[in-house]
Image: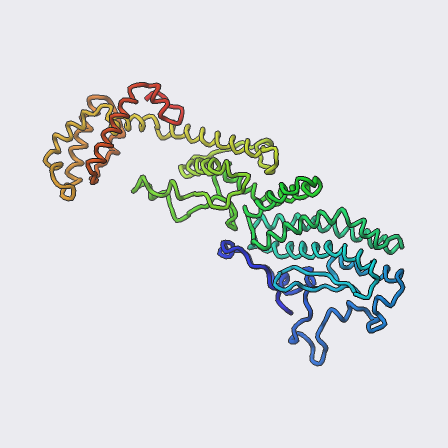
Length: 486
């Protein structure tokens, strides 16, 4: 049996491990809605001496030949025959007088053709219905191809929503067929009853064409849905349909966002979320280098950010980082989720923005409390004030007097070990005079090469900071948190 060729996937999805699609779904065209596009099976699959299978063997019926030309019948008979074929064409199946041709170079695109001998008035009405048939085939192909694992959760959800819509469409076709069997349906009536579904399916077909041509996934698919819904503002029914599709497609994305802003965890099996995690960076590197890349590059924003989250992307990133830091420190954060705090949709009421802001306020408050109570933030700030901002800098004078001989050497000749001893000695003397400060042991000595210009800038910074620290009010303006008494 011929193997189906599916549209190519985005490059980043090709790299992600995903379960393989069963061969059952790939090798059996009658399960995929694409059997009308297969002209024949390979000769190898045929029994010896048998003719190659062709749709022509049944699509033209038993009455083949010159006598079966549609134009040879009366107009009333032609109408009955073409309605029977149209009901099949509406669900992507060839009839006796309506054929399907595949468009070369366009995967999933087909065109419908009618017997040219048919009455011209009937031909015109029939061709008006063909776009609906073609849109159905395109939508069916999209549902099938985007249901594979590698296409991602957003495309899975969108395909499921489209499948539910197509079920309603097929129910409509079944009702029309019932009316036809009762002798109550004409071509004009068929055209009338298809009007409501035609505009909806056409809007979905435009969406599908853009999605397939750009191989969208994840945030790109959501952006496309969002923009298409805005573009259809003049048609309330179609816009409502596209907004429903957006809500369905964004359900999986909302679950990823919820886990990040409420737990600090990235649950993104197909790389669709707009926050990337660099697992090669570990927190253990901070014990050797406090300026390690861990803080900035462990979690970072990708390029593909949903348009409706652009303004709060940095807030979302920071919220998850706060929660992640607390979890890495062994602090279990319990976020109480109410009905109002759940992310249900990216609707026009912007309720999701309020949820994100509340999550950020909670995470920042919990982290500040943890730093104050468990890790003595105030004590560390007080040490910064004493040792780095030189609030009581007499220890530095003693240190430079004791280490004068070593400090006069060239930077490459200075021994850090010889400087560390007088530094500890001066700090111990400083602590004995001004009271206990258990963080002085964390001071380390490093040798850096600075030009005179850098030294002047550093000196000016120290003087400026010292002036600011003379006022407690100015201290509170400096720190972007609720500063306590230092």
